[in-house]
Image 1 (cartoon, one colour):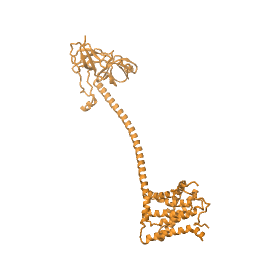
Image 2 (cartoon, helix red, strand yellow):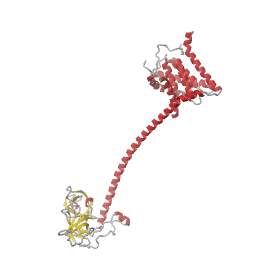
Image 3 (cartoon, rainbow over the protein chains, first blue to last red):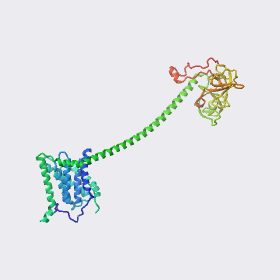
Image 4 (cartoon, each protein chain N blue to C red):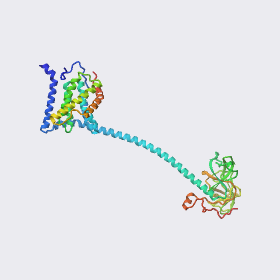
Length: 174
Length: 306
């Protein structure tokens, strides 16, 4: 049985990045997400902070750093929104960061198709966590699945493939 | 024990972090507290980058707009220059056509005013290649019944005579050519002489004695004695006169603009014509009458044809 909390196998390749690259990319993702929102609602289709959480999670393959990175990104995303209580995205992305790091060492995350499928899965999982959080803690009727969410997940997954290929260039040669 | 903790440490951390955030959420919801500090830090972290992004976007966008605008302005400028050139060309064509219409109209009016004389309009198609020879070529010739020694005139005055006739072309010797000579007289005093070319643009009036009082501006007309031009056709005016031995030296300013001839009339017969000064189309229009009307001014009307 797969123990997702288990440390990565030492024999599994762990990608290292240039110093400051992770921090800069996460910050840029948050900035772009907030910045592009001014130029049209199309930017809502793609959740850039979620994508970088997944990417660095599956690349670094360390659940502890994955959950903290996801948590930090999520909390900042909450903080930058006007009406979200702090922690809503934080909880969802903490879990996603943890899961992505745990899964990254066990399945192929380099192939574009597997990346597409991975993002598609995490997108909906992220949405389910958000919906549960909103329903249970905030008493909001958030949907678990809609056609719009399905289309958003396809767009985000398609966008993730070239974005991940771009981010691969920030890896330090092993 | 230690190994179990080590194996489940990430999961435990996850639980702690998630629980902490749940509590934070509960704290915000239940007490309606806002965690202003976190928001403040997040905004302080992101807004400088956003400001830089906005500034860069506006600069790049402005530069791009300026570049596109400049390109459009340049293309538009080129298009307008091209259009302006075409319009200038068209304007010149129209001006040329208008001038030609005016000249032809003047010639036609003159011809209509002298219906008793048989004339043929001709167009000047060239001139002599020799700068000392004052001749020109017209687009009429033997097929148009032109013969040597026929007079060539314009509504302003005489031009010269035909010296060579080809089937479709004729050569005209201008009155300022050194081989040219026209029987002439002063319109006022009726003193006779001969207007002879000197090779200069202005011909001379010869055989006028020193006792004859001649002033600049005196009109000189044909005498009809050369049997080429009818009597009393304008030749020109006295430009200057000075006594010499044995005759005065009188420089004549031709009435016809010999250096700018485009349309001329060939006198097909040597029938006598009462010269009537041509009326311009503009003057005729101002008078409200046809240009070829009967009210054309008659120059030298007192001089009866001989």
